[in-house]
Image (cartoon, rainbow, N blue to C red; front, side, top):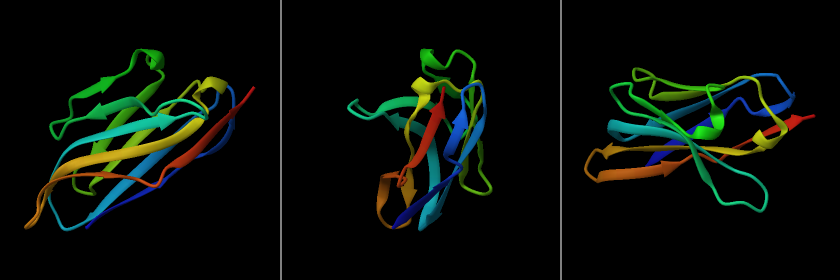
Length: 120
């Protein structure tokens, strides 16, 4: 199995910053894409940012330079630095990891989610 453990969520005032982390462990052979999604109450889960094993990143337009995704391949960990947070960023943030498992082939795993609440 692949386990993902997220951390770093919390309550912050508008304009503040948070750094989310997601560490993968288990029978991993390799990790390809690592991504962050978010889901606000009553809304569908949406992609926030993704990063490849080579470090190429992709962001959604709503972030407008406020968020930065990064990864530490040695630690199988992906990060999301969020600056200039707005109340509309309030959501549960989920990490998603794709790759290969020993003996099982491709996998796509989700973290348990971490709540981010931005007060106005």
